[in-house]
Image (cartoon, rainbow, N blue to C red; front, side, top):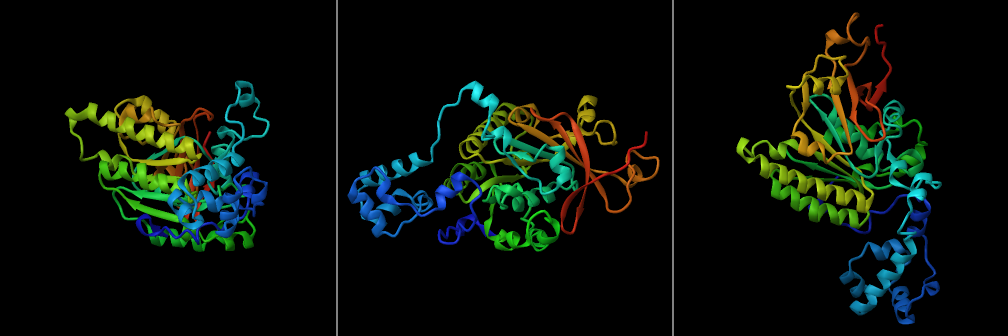
Length: 382
């Protein structure tokens, strides 16, 4: 694990196996003579021992100038040419989006939760493009799910990952290093669907980047500059914010609702921009408040549990979300015979889909174990 301010070692980041045509093009050794460029530029690239497109895109313009001894104009031409080889059609018709024969649009791409039961609830996992909120009370398991996703994103595409790292932004508590290391050590037991040799090749701890932002200005600077830099370099494909509500708890009073709404809209717009531009899922953890409207309670837990809470930050923030999930901890009385849910063993929790454009309101139960978060099947009394 690294803190963002001290982790930019360009030589040790990219160690993942190809999982798609695009990834293959990025990593394969290129025959630069086949590119439509000035022979002087091609010769300079070869002399600098640059072999792949990924190496070029990972360097800034100044770094390329220093390595190749080319002019700024030649470097811009080089970047434009190699970028053009990765671009497909920039424009899709409505019919192409609807048919989506190659399953390449964002609605067909998901980040796996690492558990078949949870994936079944979400029809594959977290959407790659958009802001997903995970709300819930204390000890509901929100951080556990977030840490699991930080590991899941590092797996190859065929196992539900995105072959990249994650950045975890803490706004109130310190990052749970010990728990993350515990999950890393248990991956060979938890992800039995992945061959052991694949798991052993992934250096999970090296691709989880940590940032702390205790106030609004620091947070915006973080997502606008530092996180953007990580995304530009291809080092992360998941952004976790823990939590959004903490940033606004002490900053605004009752009379500052308009200013608060503007901040929420600004943050939402920036996060949406990053997600769309880099095809990166944004997971925002949110806290809950006591619910006044009974319809909010019914939406959260479908009337099964006696939890009269609703997510914090109000309607303005809700309008920024693609999907809202609610995590709840089930009390002992609710697990006992005659309760809402019957289960013996570890403490049960529920994960509910409150709203999403592609999912119906639904829920499943899960437990937090030593090796990770696993969905469980329980009996519901008739």
